[in-house]
Length: 274
Image 1 (cartoon, rainbow, N blue to C red):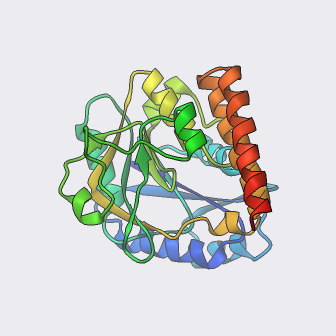
Image 2: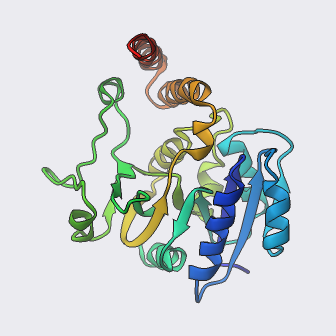
């Protein structure tokens, strides 16, 4: 049985998916893993290209553009690993991060999820962690990334000086989740088409008594947002919708309505100023 089940969801990102898979198989050593590619009905030949170049991948046609959560759940239901790894198609592994994350999960009691250090394509830090969202923070567009009072690293060098640390959520571009924990808290919320799915999952892990960590010894490059760039207006609407769903679930209807109104107004003002 594989130790890790890797799930990649794609939508018209053929070249990126192939690069991602190439790095995954080249860099991942000394650990058994299986890979699922769930394609959301791409029109660029992604599915066929993966089936040709990587026949060992379980390549699945989702039947339509189902979004991130529902597509990942297709892979989750077929997975057999102790750990389930969300991996974006626009990521590249530079080291043996899959094994590092799995080893870290093995030795950390009561852990529900862990993420690596995420780098932008130019090697700068992509801050892929934060405390769980608050209404004021979301309206202001400011995430609380403090690890300890006064410590919120914004460079790779500063982050590398730190030991792995607990946090509210880690980014879904690369997030390893305990399959045992998922059995307790449930699959990803399919009401969320894109954005905030991983935050919701992490919140539910916390509510279930599990911890969420960032492992500073693991590294992944994330080029970021290639699928969503193809439909930016749609993406902005989905961002507002997903945040509203999260707040309705975890903060109450009033906060959800206030957030939706504030974010919608900000979006309209932004369009007017362009």
